[in-house]
Image (cartoon, rainbow, N blue to C red; front, side, top):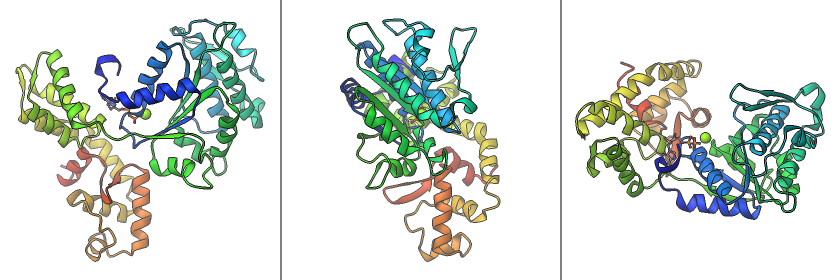
Length: 372
Ligand SMILES: Nc1ncnc2c1ncn2[C@@H]1O[C@H](COP(=O)(O)OP(=O)(O)O)[C@@H](O)[C@H]1O
Ligand SMILES: [Mg+2]
């Protein structure tokens, strides 16, 4: 989502670009779907426009240390060879600075993929990342290196890699990467907090924290109106607010519901409240099999299934109260704590202002409809 389809986040974009320029590390945190990746790409664009070098690595699919290193090397190589690069480098020139020669594959569209052999790299994966960061730092013209930044999206995965996670290794990298701003971005707030917050956390005090909230209604509704307008439809502010509130302000859900309402309006010139409701139903239907799967996956943990249904019926902060414990099968408080932690980890429930709730408004509707 680029350019004019990007809503607000001006302060956050400016802050990120400024830290990237100054070589300061940043942690970007929010639940999934709040707009971290969108913000990172926006900031990367602005930073590059100012002459900065920015490598963006998505760690989501990395399952081992070597795969993390591979994703980072690939990001650096792509940045240096990419169209935004002012001083285009040759592939050999870039790879020469890595302690191991990776396998390189160039796709039909010219995109470069990097493969590192775990048998060769082994324990030296951290050294390979160090090399890649150094290449990024020194890239640019011959005389002066431009400011450089390495963005690590889906950083929370490092907590599950190796024995007990590799967060600590990134402290070493962050300490040594002088002149390169590392942006660590992650969902799973609990995991990100374990990595960054409090004494003893591997990355404690390593950088500034940017906690992303939802986008304000006052920004998002006029944005939806402009979008509808440019596609030839009218959207009243009240209907825009209905979309925003039905989607519970989460940027991704707001956009999804706005599109579904637009489609429901068909040939009509105005998006009405009724179209919002139709759009909502369409989304629930479209996701029904995924919801059924997620619910079935909890089959070995009926307490979790019952909690999900109970929260769909009534969000509550009193999850240890007698009424709730009885409603979920007469279990004890410990069982509820364990179940909530697991549901939270699967992003099926969330806790806002102390109140536990189903995380997704469409899933809530599906649960309340009795899986119709
Ligand atoms: N600033 C924004 N303006 C408009 N839509 C946004 C914005 N941020 C996020 N969105 C919507 O939410 C979706 C998910 O955002 P994404 O950046 O992938 O979230 P995250 O990385 O936090 O999971 C986007 O595809 C877009 O539809
Ligand atoms: Mg993302």
